[in-house]
Length: 114
Image 1: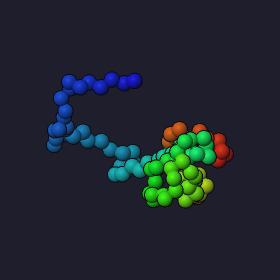
Image 2: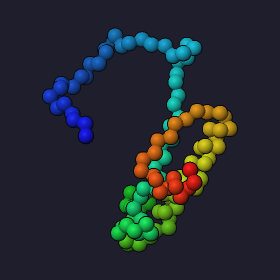
Image 3: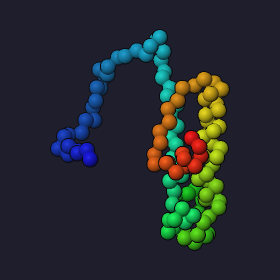
Image 4: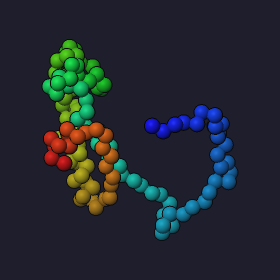
């Protein structure tokens, strides 16, 4: 684990008016990076053997926490069933380079065939 130097003073000034000047290749003024954060399939769910379902959702469920909630599951499943494929299709159609960041989605990636 990384250690944090807690004695170093904070810098609220930075470069001030003398920030470093740089140029993008070809004189471009903006760089855009498309990054997909693929974070599906990590929620708790009794169907997968968890004692309770995940409580971090947009809509609060009236179902007991130890029971499945199909509305909640649908919310989480959208990314793997529809969302990621829609993004990949658009990036391919317009020949846009992109990066994908995965975060503990082994089960979702394996089950989704990615």
